[in-house]
Length: 304
Image (cartoon, rainbow, N blue to C red; front, top):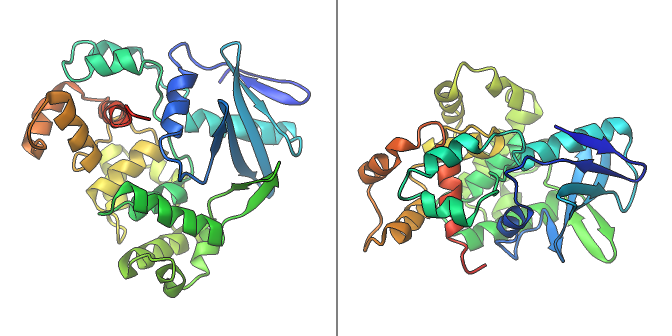
């Protein structure tokens, strides 16, 4: 990734096909989000690099991503880690030219790429956070999922205060591995979800599950099988995590309710499409199912 280090900020040169406004729009889709804040087109994100809590102030300057540090200046090594995180978060290394070429010849995707050109697949680089967020979202509406995440973060996450605002960090696997199921039940998590989350936290905390471990699998299907072998992770959860934490472009959470709703609207259907119909619609999306899904999700936020 092309970036420059300055005395009190760093500058990332994003790809040509990158839209600040579209990426910011997606990040603003819920006013319940607790892990980042956007104020007057400035994005605030708290990161933990080794043991340091570093608040990043991210803005657009002359088509570049300017990252400032309003509380403490990170070292060069820490800045490199910050660039790595932001590169993953905004999926800056994927070349979208092939996706746009394919989508331009697809009746469903063609109008979406015109509207949302430059939108990147906003990821969740931390595997534990991605897994927990996916499990939280199982079989509940998005509003309540955000409520549960907010409670989890405020009870067990770290934070810093800047200009009267709290900026939060997702709890570590080690922290969640040390709590009891009842601690999550008190926050209105179901028994099952509380068990799944604590079990996964223990796996990650003791080194049984790492992001690199899954990367070493032969292919996407192998990664998916490994995730699905873990209690609480079904096909949808595995695909969501591979899409959001690994930028796995073939990941396709085909059972996703948001995907079904978006297709219903885009196709003017009176009912949600069946899985068989979605397989038919998506036959041209091979290798880009994750981006197709993400752009369809974006279409649900037209009123944002």
